[in-house]
Structure formats: C-alpha cells, structure tokens
Image (cartoon, rainbow, N blue to C red; front, side):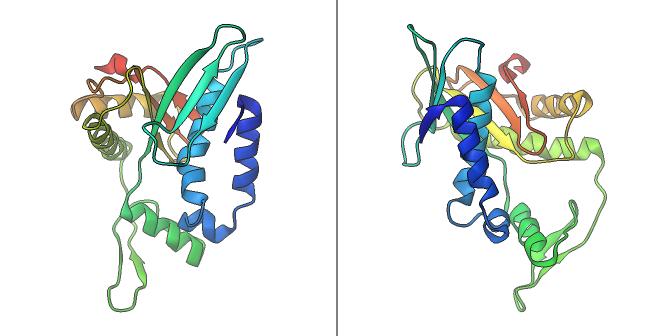
Length: 212
C-alpha cells in the first residue's frame, strides 16, 4: 500500500470504518494488521507532513525487515524506515471478545476463560493511575527489548503503539515516562528514534530516547 500521507491515512480510515463489529473486536481477517500496524503508520505519516513538502507512505504486508517506508521531500528525498510494534495481551483480547459478545467489559481487573464452558469471566478491580502507567510502561519496555534482540537496518525508527482511550494529557505521559525509566528505558538497539503512539487518543510522542 503506497500513497501520499493524507491519502494513505484516508484509505486506512475508510478500511477501518468498513470493518464489521466482529472483525473490529476480535481482530480477525485483515483487522489486526489494519488496526495495529497500518493505523499507527498512517498517523506517523501525518506527523511527518511539512507545508509544501511531499510526504509519501508505503506500508508492507509481507515479512520484510521493516513495516513501512516514509519518503519526505520534493527534489531531494529523505527516506525513513519504520518498524511498528503493538502493546497487547491475551487478557486484552479477552476484553475485546467480551465487548463483542456482551457489549461491555470491565477495563481493569481479572479476566479469564472458563475451561469448561468457554465463557469469559471478568471481575472489576479498580487500578490507580500510577498502577496503570506502571503496567503499561513495563509492557512497552518488554516489547522494546524484544525488538532490540533483532537486527534492523541502520537508522530504523521504532514506533510502539498502544490503545487506551482513557490515557491522555501531560500528567498521564509523565507517569508513563517515569515507569519506562524504572523498567530500564528505551536505550540501545541501534534505533535512530523511538516513538510512542496511543491509538485511543491519537497522541504521538516523539524522541522518547531522550529519557535514556
């Protein structure tokens, strides 16, 4: 998939809007790639826009050494190589499935599938903002460390995406930054830059490597 940044983002939005409710929540078919890779890529492409300068986004769906290439420039073109990873878990997948089946699911607390009946059982348990940031920070650093263990083209940019519509504002980001530091930061691995993107609030935080 290759198009100018605005067109690329519009195409992604149209494809998301066309998803069935089942595909959206269960991430079946093309939905997983669309929501967890193409959507973050499209928003990073929009972030790269400069007035009067052409920005083109190309995303790959095969098993290449990168997930996308972003070309910036009119005559002299700068090429950015982008690798995307997404914060998810079995528990979050169960919450989405419960949302699809029942129309609601607790956002926090224990959740599991009954081995006998197959029914999803969840119990709400409140989690403080600090606890929530700590859990997310640990997952982000764990994903980063997995990526660091692999070899990527030099100057590759890493985009770590997550989806939390309740997470927004400077205070939440500061709590998350503190958590990331506690878990060891986002240093090493040869990535030129590391960026965080929250699909739930459409927030993109850049140059996270300054936390190291």
